[in-house]
Image (cartoon, rainbow, N blue to C red):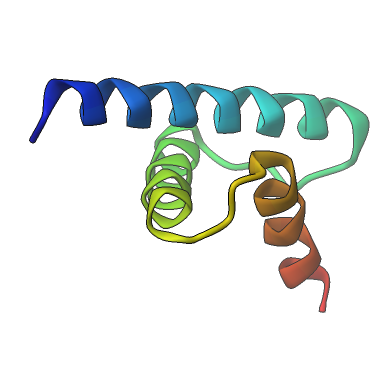
Length: 69
């Protein structure tokens, strides 16, 4: 895999993890062990990079909208 692509995915994963941490602070989310969060963020990163969505905030918010319905 291209180093640039790896670095881009790492940045996306960090952003998603930080966003999750903020949401976790502002809303009561169920406890998830760190390993489960890491797996979830890795899946979300792959999904985000493979979708046409350009706005990471919309992508992130949709993950929780889907859970509530």
